[in-house]
Length: 280
Image 1 (cartoon, rainbow, N blue to C red):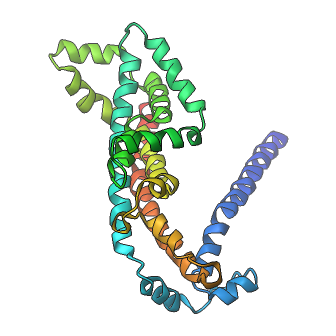
Image 2: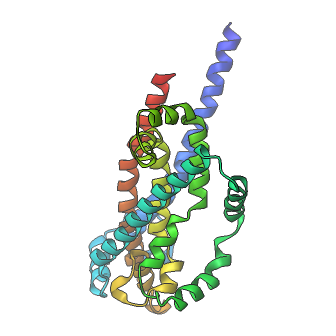
Image 3: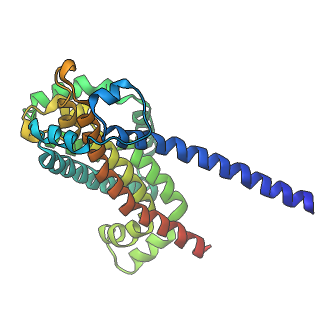
């Protein structure tokens, strides 16, 4: 009995050590980012330091003194990220619901196409996407940055797999017998059930859209439409005049909305897990 107990605590001790190490690995880069945001360019070039500097206000003055429209960047990135996340998650959930509930001709073929799309690197489509948008005369517009987010194959895959374990066809049939139409069933019954999955995918989609640099950089030419990552990148300028302290500060500021969004959406994930545990 004692040996079993010692083995049990030994396994948990190893798990705790591993979790602490993983936590440190995740936190250290963010901590170094915040430290460098308070140091001067000369201090950053001199080497690594774990002690914060005293140049935070100086970096902030450089950041705002070079025409860095931080609030404009926040607004542009927030608009793009929230719009993309809402459209992507909602329509991906609708697609996953259709693949899970309905039995139609070509269903397996459509599912296979979705899986193939997931395997293809996104970089392969950049040139063709740019040419297509140019022909539509939609360059320097937010439309090609938002609308394509509806076709999120990875989100469809995740949500369909979640629905297969959380939603029974009998529940949907019962709602139909009660007289509910398909849109009402989806919006009123299905979406609350899969809320934890929606919250998880919302986090991934929001972070991906917020940090997206290549696509906006290719399509947007008006500085007033620049996203926050594009504005931070523009701070580099000439390599001999780069203020790395200000750049680090700009990157640190750009992380704030991601942390706020994660803190807000993670509540729904935790509540969903709790409800599932109580249901069991």
